[in-house]
Each structure stands twice: as structure tokens, then as C-alpha cells.
Image 1 (cartoon, helix red, strand yellow):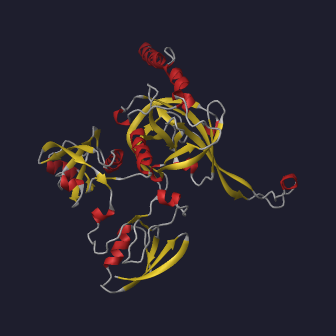
Image 2: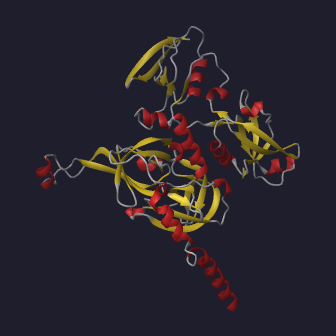
Image 3: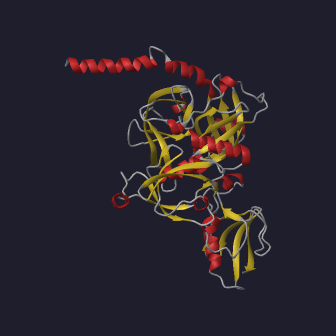
Length: 444
């Protein structure tokens, strides 16, 4: 009994030495808390209220009271640039026409969407209000940390506005790294940080901090089936996306150029591996960085830029943390030996994976960012034409959604359908041009 009591006292004392005695947590919150904002996203869409419940609303506003502005949602965010740029989750501001940002001192500003990566649930908004002077002082701007250096067991601090409770602080540890989480059939996340710091609705978009007060992730999701299971997007991926948005106005996907397969127990025995942690290259595509820099089939990728690559999901996400044009330092296993191979990544292009290139035109699969910028239905699938093609009768900005009777969901699908045509054979393209549905007839 004495032994058990002794262990409990040591544990409590250890926690107190970090958060109570030295007030480390309080100091961090006092310093970083003002960087955190509350975001209310509103839509000009309409809510339907009981049409028979009329009265004072209609009397004063001259409208039936079944028509009222609809509040889309509420969440958190944090200022990361003195120019008024704010990071949050895409789902916090999705489909909103009006964004209202409230600062720690109660000041309210209107904001607008700048860009982001919807598939990663990352959004950037910017203060766009006549009341804003144009510059925030440094003490209102968060500092980024380094999520690649996180260790399981480190302290983590979450700040946000759960259930509209402004600037709520919760504390926990980094429970795991590289977690995958499926939200629905269409939405899933990979390489997330798992923490037991309590995160609730309204925390979404807020910062996850380390003990130095630097942002190591964006709080994004909870597991509704369990307690103490919260997740955050690693800040290194966020840094990459914000850098691309600011420099290019879009997110550029990094390309390695390989097809991969998970390691099995048979692979471990056959190739003399110590464990099944890693991914094996099944194929190397021509005219890609992987081919240029010497990667080969049967190579096993173990580590990239210091991050252990334990599965396919972590590799995919890690590559997207490395900007186009920068070096991926790859540690691999080949012929029973570890090797080091630097590979300079290029921008992703579907052409790198398409064999048939007889029909030459510049286009890409319609992205989530394209849909937002062009105000298209989020569920729309198609191909966005990037440059005029006289041969096909296409103009820049055309969106191809169907060829003959086949729906066109991607550039690969379009090129596949074109490859089935004989020379001189006519075909019909259905597309959206300048917001209108139209069609063109062409000949291969």
C-alpha cells in the first residue's frame, strides 16, 4: 500500500512541477491565447420555419418569418500573419457567404476566404474589413513549431471555443503519430497527430501547442465513439500549404512517381527486413523524379527527412509536406543493405501516369479548390481545360463533364475514352462554359 501511494505522489508531483508550480501552461496561454480567434460562418441561404407561426417578425421586418438568415457554423482559428491571415478548418467555413472573426478582446471583423486544401481540411481566411488597420502586432501572431520532431508522450495544449465557450484551454499529451481517421465514405485523413487533450465541437480550427507555445497542429476532429481521442493536422503540412497559397495561389502536389505496396511477412523474410514497417516500391514510372534519381522496384522506403515511414498513408502525407523543388532525403533498403538517396520532387502531373498521349491538350482533373473558386457544386466531377485546344474546339476554363455517354470524372478517364476512338471518328463533349451547359462535336 505504501508503494502504491508513493508512486501516486511522484506522478502528481511531476505533473505539478510542469503545470502548477512553474505555471508553464498558464504562461503559454497568456502569451498565445490572444492569437486565437472565434469564427462564425454564415450563409445567405434560408432556413424554413413553420409557415403558420407568423407574427411580430413579419410585422417589423416585412417578410414572412419562415425566411431568416441561416448560421452555417462556428469554430476556432488562429492568426499566423500580421497581415491578417488566419488558419482554420475547411469544414468550419464551408459554403459560408459571411465570415465573422472575433478577437480575444471582443473586436469583430469581417473576413474572406483566401484558399486552402479542402481534402486536408485546411483553410486560410483573411481579415477584410474597413475597421482593420492592415497589420496586427507581433503578440497577436502565432509561431509555428516543427511537427516532424514530435515525440509520443510530449505535452500538448489545445485552445479553442467549444460550444461557444471562448478561449477554452485543455491539456494532454501526444498519444500517437501517423494516425488515419475515416469521417465518411468520401472524407478521410492520414498522418494525424492523436492527443488526449479534450477537443469538442467549436475547437475545430484552433491550435494545438507544445510546451514552448508553438503551434504543432490544427485541431480538427474527435472520435465520437471514444473518450480522450482527439486529432490534429501536423503543422508541417499546414506550412507547406500556406506557402504554396501565398506564392502560387494554389496548392501544388509533390510528385515522386512510384506505385507502392504494403510490406507483408513474406516480404520481411524474403528481403531480410527487421520488421514490416515501411513500404515497397512496386513500380517506378518513367519521366518522374523516382526514375531520374534511381529508385527501383523492390526498394523498401524506411524513412523520409527523418520521419519513419511505417505505412502507405504516412508516406503519402509526408511527401505533401515537402514543397515542389525541394529534396526528399530517402532512406531505403535494397539488396539487404540500407541506402540513402536524395530525390528532388517535382509537381504532380497525371501525364506522368498516362501511357497514351496522342491527344495533346493542357487540362487537369477538377479539384476542390477549382470548385470553390468557380462556385461549382462540391459534388461535380470533371476536367478543367487550362489552355485552348484548337484540335478539340476547347477554350481555357471549359469544364468537361461527359464524353458521348461516359461521365468524365478525371483527366485519366477522358484520355482513356479518347484512346478508344479510331482516327477520324467523331465524338461529343458535354461541358460547362462560362456557367452554361453546352456541347461540342469534334473529330479525333
